[in-house]
Length: 162
Image 1 (cartoon, one colour):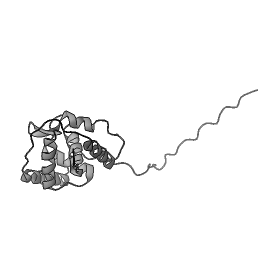
Image 2 (cartoon, rainbow, N blue to C red):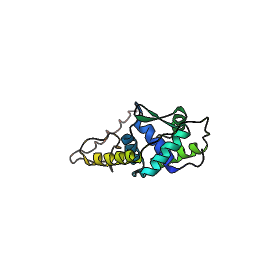
Image 3 (cartoon, rainbow, N blue to C red):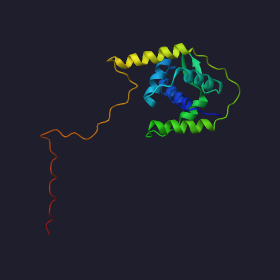
């Protein structure tokens, strides 16, 4: 698949995150893209990426949402679990460059206004107090020791009698 754009790898990983059990809606895919990159690509790039990946047989529209095809799931499987998001995106981009299209596939036509609505809905949901499950867990900066709780000294080893 040549050329491979940065939005392609981001869209594949975001679709994989948002469509685990059911087809991912456009708002969920936008939220996952924001989670992965802390930035949402503009509407035109997302529309082009959806169409390009569908024509290459990697994404398909299903039941009001989007899912990865078997070929795209092979690309996503085996990614390093403990790697950071930029490393994962680079690995997907590398695998996409080696991917060869098999057969012809129908494209997906998405209205840019729908993408704009999804982006605005995601930004509006960030401002609410509802819990977003696509947000990573906060990591503690350092171990916090509470006052009055000290570690105990280990007991001294028993001396052997000779």
